[in-house]
Amino acid sequence: PVGEEQGTVGPRPLTGPPEQTPEEMSFYAPDYLYLTIVALILFPPLGIPAILFSRKTKEANKNSKWEEAYINSGRTGWLDVFAILIGLGLIYYLVLFM
View (cartoon, rainbow, N blue to C red):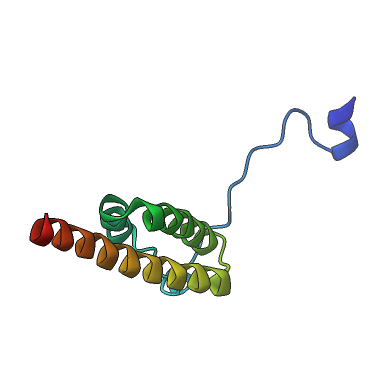
C-alpha cells in the first residue's frame, strides 16, 4: 500500500505557510487596501492594476518575500496616487466646465 512506503497510514495533513513571528510581521509592506478601493472608485483604469499589486503585496508578505512585497507595495501606492489625482481632476473638470 501507498501509506506504508511513507511510513504513515492515511492522508497527510494539509499545512499552510509557516507561522510568522512578531519580528517578521513588523517587516510587512503596506498593501494600501483602502486607498486602492478609493482609487478604483475614482479611476478604474488605474484602480484595477492597483488591486492586483495590492493582492501581490499581501501574498508576498504572507510568504515572507519582503523584497517582492515592498516592490509591489510601491507600485500600488503610485498607481493609487495617480488614479485618485486623475479621478479628482476629471470630476473637477466636469463640474467646472459642463
